[in-house]
Length: 59
Image (cartoon, rainbow, N blue to C red):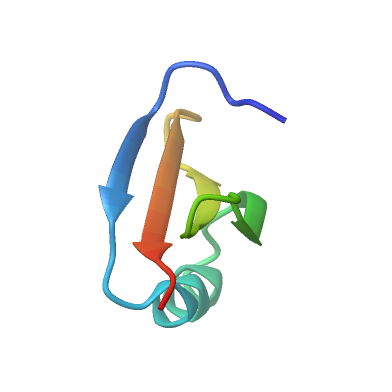
């Protein structure tokens, strides 16, 4: 599923970021899931409803 135009940020630890965002009631709309090219990604909504991708290169 695509999310259209969005901004993406690379993070050091996606699981740590996921836990932090969930603890602060940030809506996760997709993932975390592997993208198929060595990237693990997750999509969240910012307070205005814009989609933000967070990703990490899998080891």
